[in-house]
Image (tube, rainbow, N blue to C red; front, top):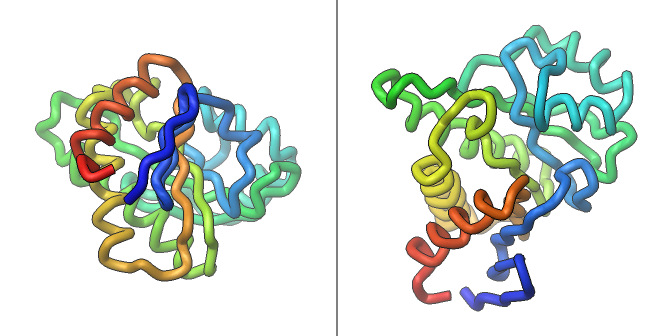
Length: 185
């Protein structure tokens, strides 16, 4: 894969890392780091619900929640994205309660939904690294490795995966792990 560097942005032909606001990203779907009720919360979840408008909450109410590591899809409503894929990341409890496996499941289940709906692009936040306290270094490695594995297994229709990071520090950690996982870039 060929790497293109532009300021705070790294991308390959299929994976891109940016710092920004996920609610403004142009992608077929954005991922919501939701709580298990899917009825709104804090952080990314609150921002997505605010930007999408009240119809998102109404549709989420029909989904009857979501289990940790799973994912469900809704329309994007007032967002630039056509869809929102909601996933519930694990709360960090020291790494002894299958947190890594559950986090990998968040990413792989979101990608499965994207494939099922023939989406070409998807944007992820850094799932579970905010209020759920999953350490950013292992979380970013799990995120990037899971996406890499899924893309290698199924080259399908998905053409772009964007990681939208909130802070300079988060972006730097993702960039470091990206370079380790994609040394040929």
